[in-house]
Image (cartoon, rainbow, N blue to C red; front, top):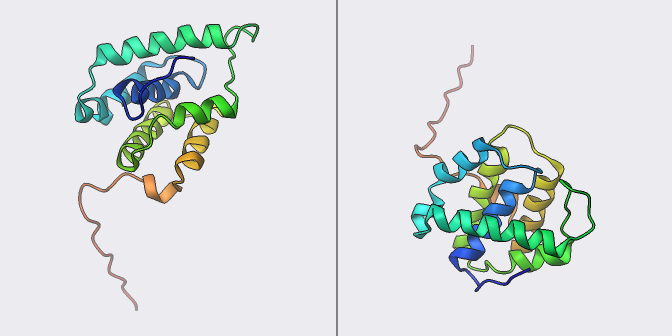
Length: 148
């Protein structure tokens, strides 16, 4: 599996690509979630770069995991941890993790592979669920409680 520079566009794209593929297929709703997350635009990453890294990931997986059942590839935790370690900037990790959550949630179903990827990212980067929740665009208003 090729290595990318820490916090590089390619490292970010590979983790997004893993999010896209972790349920066993490439879903149009998940691709739309990447676009809607605006992470690519925020970081100055082009869609062609994401597509190239996605292709490179598929090529690497076919070479790295020979002999596994077609359509069912599993990454061991050592490799997954190495890929996650390529993003070590805390602010970037939070942005990326939010985008990854948006991707895996886009089709309304959390597959086993998606759950493994997200839980491993949260463990390696030491974030809990509350740290990566989307920030509300408008402040919540306090509810009044009526008592009779």
